Image 1: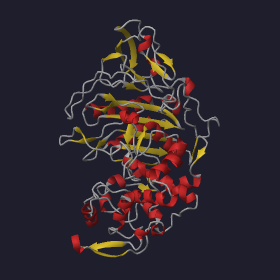
Image 2: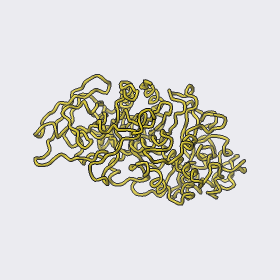
Image 3: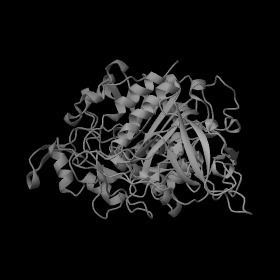
Image 4: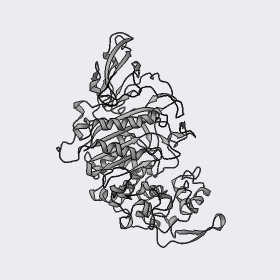
Length: 559
């Protein structure tokens, strides 16, 4: 087990399981030893190859005990079992034998997934030394017992759910609900974590990060987080504002002259497009709040959407262009509306990425790494992956006509990309997303590192739409849908302003954002809670998953 997860069968033999879904607590796995922060079943199971050992696992539904037989391979004579880094990844091991899940909804349920949730050892439960009651528990120290250059931070479960005011049975229902989508072939696999006061109280991985290869989802799996990049870009802009290098009320043209004299679409198409001067300049805050008049090419709700497609912006970037050139293309297209008069989700965060480059004098990836990701210990987050990280990267899937899954092309991550997208370019681990959520929950500071003032985080996470409007009432026609009721927008994040009008139980002031590959995070300050969900599916239509996750999580809250 690494940080509360037991890995049964990977390198230790074949796992035979009596049920398709299993979640267990590590402390309930018999005949298991703890060494270096990992719980290892096989080395202690028996002295000879092929010896069967009995382990008792708590079923996913809670209360039911399922027998598990492990056929374990003993370590070779004269060799000690490897001691992995605490806080790192396990030593390399042969792949587990598994049957690939066909890409159809009617596919049979996969074998029990080998990563299972549990509680971290007591030695890993140390939290904020400033004392309980502060509501700002620190992250678990990442103690390493081997070469730190090879160590990799990994999310761990710190406490049992009941210690955090959560109902374990309700959380099991959440797990079962999403696991059912995996069993139906609608999701390849997933990871979910819930933390209160900074301490992870629920952590589950299920399914596969690569269906064809039979590779399981693990705590150290890497995910394309796409639009969850936007809040990171917003933090970068606010850092520069705190340093006095820009103001949220600066006209964009002050820093990016290509946006001087913006024009608004009035009619026509093709070579006969008619425009007029905008009523005012685009301000930096308009980009942060998606009220600048920009759009996305994938919408089909306004003639300007078609102009973006005609400019080769189907993927928000012209073929072969870098960030500088891409932003120049945006600037040459008309706005949908006068800046500040509507909300329309858009390419604005790419413009903000270029703004960060110009104002800081650094490429966007360098600024992120040196000013945000490095100080926060987000060592698995970036615009590209190394060879080792590539082995942990989840495959990206799209939906087939019958609702199944098929692999699709994702972001080019092997090597530094030419286009550094502040809108959707990052890949990250669950550990790193947790660290970023903690930065915001703790109002700009984490483990003694302060990136933003409390005032700036407060500004970022409150509604900025005029008159307290929500996204549906202030949004463009493309956003006239019930899911936008009761939800406003801050600086790079959505904000719940009226829980009674939202589609699922939420707390007032809850904020967060999601990615197109069905990843999401949110922070609920009122409940001192953070939540993240990771999978890798770009759906053709909504899976209706997020409202269900919010409902099921709400059922788990006891206080």
